[in-house]
Image (cartoon, rainbow, N blue to C red; front, side):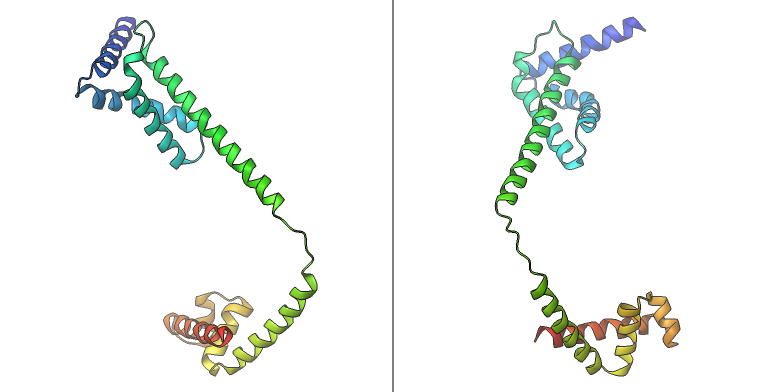
Length: 186
C-alpha cells in the first residue's frame, strides 16, 4: 500500500511539473484529479455554495498561474491545499469586512424616529379604504376573498365552504384580489 501511495504522489508531482512546463494536456488532468479534494476542503471553510464555487475556481486559476513556483520537494496536495486555505481565509475575511462595513454604514445612516402615531393614522385610513373596496366587490368574489385572506382558510377549505370546485374558488379569490388592487391603487 505504501508503494501505491508513493507512486500516486510521484504521478501528482509529475503532473504539477508538467503544468508548470506548459503542457496543455496536464492542467485538465490535474483539475480532474484535485477538484473534488479542493472543493471538499473549501466547502468546510465556507458555507455559501456560490462562494465555494468561486473560491475553487480562484484556487485552480492560481495553481495554473503559479505552477512554475511549485517546489517538487513538497507534496503537491500540501501545496494545493495551502493555496485553497489561503483563498478560503481571504474570502471569509472579505465577507466579514463587508458585513461589518454594511453594519457601520447602516448604523450611521439610521435615524431613530417615532412614526407610531402617523402609522396608526395611516392604518385606520387603510382599513377604511380596504373595507370600502371589499364591500364594492361582487358577492361571490367578496365571499371568496374574505374566507381566504381574512378568515385564513386554505384554497380547498374555501372551495368546500362555498360549495364550488377548487379552481372556481381560486379564480374568485384571484379576481377579487385583482379588483381590490385596482381600487386601492387609485
